[in-house]
Length: 277
Ligand code: PXL
Image (tube, rainbow, N blue to C red; front, side, top):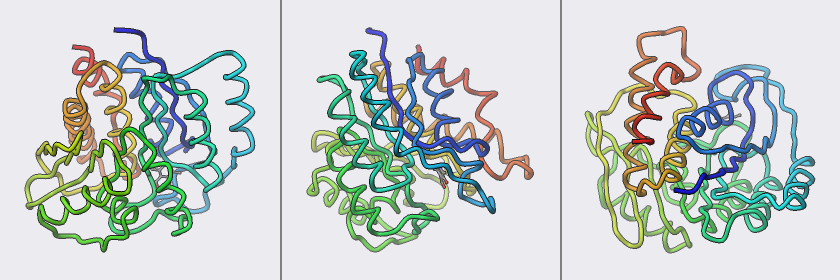
């Protein structure tokens, strides 16, 4: 197995256990070299904290990429998460074209919405730009809400397989290649991940915990990307990432003071063991 170098492009939320502060440790624990391109620096994430600061780093993105290109640095995977503006989305597309190895993966988590709503600060113009990135990627990892925005589908809390199949079909028709749809739940006690890869659908079902935490989408996508770069299949990677997120929530749920993210650090070694096995 060759030594893999990943580039992840997302913000730094200094406090809040999401985006780069989880992507970097999670990817590193999977045994892959992780390079970062921070798109912005926020004092905290935007989900529940008031008055956060936001330093836009859009203007730094291309000079950084230009330098890498001059140094002949390329990546086995370019994985993007939360992005702060439409301009950044176009830069990610350009950087992927220039710096992704020919046989590498572009992985896009369109981190922009959950629970039927766009995150604070996003609008439909941003969704239009995000479509370009998602539908050009090799693998995308939307949740149900994001898939709805990406396909102009009405969001439903309760749904059946017909509804999720139609989301996959619409995504594929718009150009999505491999789709890993997260948070797909058909009953009260289980949830899972619905995958469409090369026209074949599969579903990994696991225990549902009735509590949502910030940053679990980022942990999921990072663990998935790490496992995939250790030569696990898409299905295996999706399963490993799902099981890890469940463990992270289990490890947090008893601590009411820890509302802003999950306590993933003490169990990170377990992800490493699973991925490196
Ligand atoms: O976890 C996604 C995410 C990343 N970065 C910032 C966020 C969020 C979700 O709200 O606010 C700044």
